[in-house]
Length: 271
Image 1 (cartoon, rainbow, N blue to C red):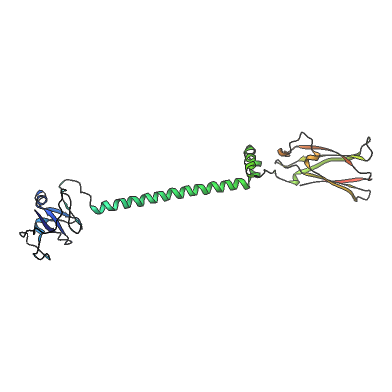
Image 2 (spheres, rainbow, N blue to C red):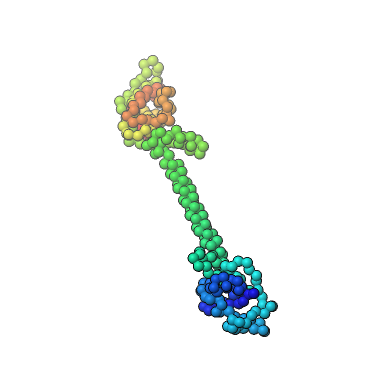
């Protein structure tokens, strides 16, 4: 037979069986406030009209009192779905219904926080990679200068990106040395210009253009032309390799004056 007992701490009513009360000496734990009390001392009964309760422990439940059968000695559920837990001496405390609902929520929060941390880490890594790729793209020329071993890789990458690796242009590091201009004895109206270019810097530079101006006796310009590296360098020279530090380039150009009498010249290097 089942009886109704109530928690003296929170006044919550519970169903309990005589077997449960006798097995544990009447000691029970309130599933609402966790207070341990003697259920036999707190028995109540429902009045005949179904309202109110009495603290008389000898009054039995009517046959029509709502009840829920249970086979688990550790928990009973009242019509209000509260629980009563029977205490066990020297045993582990049972888990409660509230904990069963709360644990998955805590686990879900921890899992969500961990997932967000991983997402932030991946996003930061992607941003760092993008920033690194952009830096390499915009600084590719300087990287090729200071790290020559990377130039083949940069050239291949630029072939895919439709860009180019440009050598530095430092005109102040290029010196014109020992230039001269003479008439060609075998061909009338043809003169030969010769000169040396020296890279006095410490970097591999782009080959400059050569600007040659022919002048008259009053040093007034008569003819002017700009020669590109492919025009004054020998056919064996690899222009893309650049003008190496300390290197010297010998220039020997045949120039036709178209029967214009020239007496002097001016030469410059420019980019």
